[in-house]
Image (cartoon, rainbow, N blue to C red):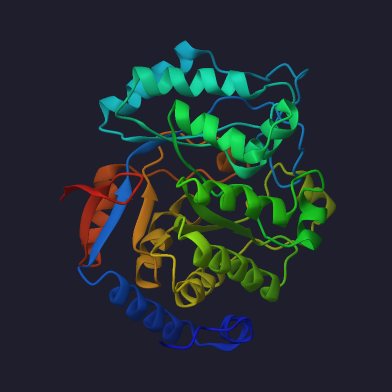
Length: 349
């Protein structure tokens, strides 16, 4: 068995390696894991069922409080309309997340998931981040495991990795002091994986973290993956600061460069020897750096994202449809394919 990359080795690569060489190493590793040269994407829609949230993350421009004039909870009819529109373009998945509403309990979520799953059995519900799961448990006075079991029984298929940000309590205490700590985030995903519910692991970098904290984040995920093999993919994006409290408090935070994004992406591909898929974050990087990411270790272009509200609230407004994804993938001489949530190929182009 080849020796695993250590935390120290990964930090050194981030800080000293030549970018072009990093890209070559990451591309070689990607080809080893995905030898057929197929680059995938999913046609889905983000549905933010509410923007009401009590967690008040300083990096978020999307949330509102209950009393705000523009606070909302979507009705079933509004959700149905969004799913109907998704089905019209051949979509297969909804990324279903909200703010963390202070008053909604498990029965409300069960009814909603059951409604969607019953009416739209072909749509995969990829929903509820760790903070939502944890708070539903607290609010409903039940365990994290019971929340997951009950929602899974009603039709929840998998959970997204949102809310990981940086798995460092030092960083979390600065950027989102009310949010769950790193151990609880990991515990929600551990419980999901034990139940056979797959998930993803994410990272939002570019606030106040160090390179070592970035690599430790990867290591927590790699160690959890060793336990149950429950992470399907890793997705990384840079902090988008417009309209956020964090930028007001820390104006010295610099916008992250494309070089930085590609460098971190490449090292993550080398570090994650047990997570098969890495998504390109074209939503924050733009379509051409999103395409370049495919030469730096990413094997998936993520979602066509029919609707995106959270990152766009903070100033990132990149868009891409299926035809453009196919074109960008072909442009680097790889084979485009539409996939489902579980990375099964649905259609080749």
